Length: 426
Image (cartoon, rainbow, N blue to C red; front, side):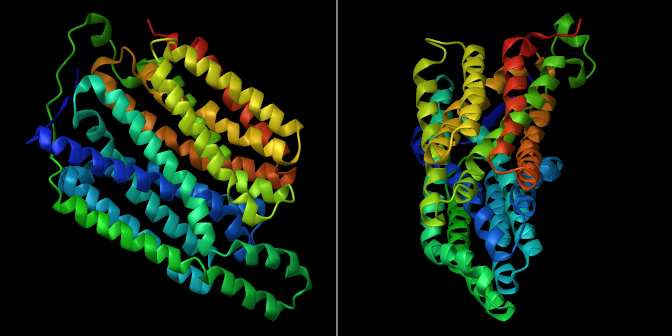
């Protein structure tokens, strides 16, 4: 296997501490990432945005993964994995810091710049921390550790909108939304300025947590990661391949992952805004994203128990894609809390897609595993593009009708799970 990874000075005593540190990092991933579900409707009011404009929140955040993909490895090579993670946390703190001048000037572009910088730091952090999950303990229990990290991530996503929503005083946001039309221009600007300033205290808290975590990681006993030199694969079938683009199932897998990340972000980050569009107050709607995250955690637990003992990963992906189509259609053709419940249940449909698409896409690629993995990471850009398409359709049609954008996404994932992953180039 090419590009094997090893750890220096990894002892049994360090393993538990390492897992705790990496778990804390995955919690931060989830908290920062899924906070966008609340920022979308909040900034829509505070910055007087259209639906389409508000979804540049997800675009700015996720497009950073594509931009930073070539730089993440260079950063880690320059600083090492442990120090590189501290640097990444510092970059995220700088992004959070930009929210202060953004709020003071109520400038949407500065908010987006802050989100892009935070996404850039997170891209480096994810590149560094994911290998640790596999190698800080026994190989045979790696899947269990990956699932635990996923649960840390999604539980943080469940907590984030509720906790930050408390600081943002969403009851006042609801009142302001109702009163905006009756206010004079001066009164409206004063009220919106005051609303925008409410993001400063929670983001100061986020800055402090990020910097403390950066210091903790830097001073920790977290072992360093080193990469072994690549080994050539002797198999004639694999040696006949000239590049990763000679593997059709990899390219189909990248597109499937692109679509999966897009629908996952739509399910998690649009649900609060959609609840408001259904006539539900923001103070109540802030809890809906938690429902999506809880559904994903339930899906993780189901996966831990059933795969591969009771169901193969390709069959799990097929079931997930079918559930995605069914729940999307039910959300489109029902109303109110029932429709919102089906959007939340998309978390269950999406939960097993990431762990299923990766191994199916990486099968039989041999020495091109590293290149294939890099392409799959770039597939995260689906979280930037597809929600933006949803926002455009929500503006043109309605927030509910715009969920039709998810149907072809789930159908392609179903195709990949049924036959796409089997395609090999002779």
